[in-house]
Image (cartoon, rainbow, N blue to C red; front, side, top):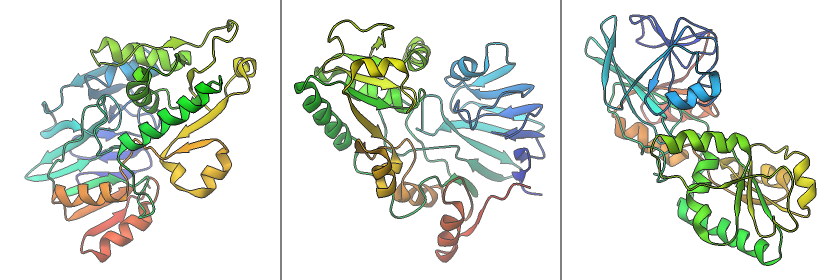
Length: 322
């Protein structure tokens, strides 16, 4: 019996009878962070970090039954010891350390190695077995230092502002939007607006004490030239009817996928390679620093990463849910 098994419902820890980021409704779910592909509705109870819980409630409803823990705080289920450690992905995101009968496994969740000044910074957790995400698990994905990308975005915004045009950026309402607002909003170039979905998330994060700048909501009706030189964050690529009223605007996209030409060509606007996930080197460095000899890969390029790790002497395999 493995300490963590990959079942049709998701990752499962048999001795604790608990699931981790399960795909389907279960009795008890440990959730690494509040993104919808990890925190799903329908579970009877949720366990997460203190800073994830308000965000999970925002997304799933205040009615959910949940318990939360500090980073580094140990809790036990059926004799299995669990501990959350920061993953650096978004506010509240965690890696999960599982210890039982002298064996230690770590489920990474989603993670990034570059501190962003807002989310709790990543910590390496030594273990025997590491379950790593591999969203960008190919050598082509090599991130530049984030400050370089933020400067490029400021220059792009400034150029658009000088032409009197608004700069429109689509960003996830949890994670990317706050990261960009944190680093760009106080640049002094122009006003900053955000979609209501982003503002609701911002409010929760601000109430928890995170130093996130306050920005304006997208108005129902724009005043004459109110949008000139503005930076506007939309929650998705579908901007809504308000966007047509401020045309012509300049579109920007900040994503790890912009490392690939096919995505840059498809986007058609300004492209900035910025991700909330670890790049190839970040993944390899993390695996090495954990000291793990057994590695499971999941998401993205899981098969390719596992095959490469095997050539390097690791006992590695892509997670297969069955």
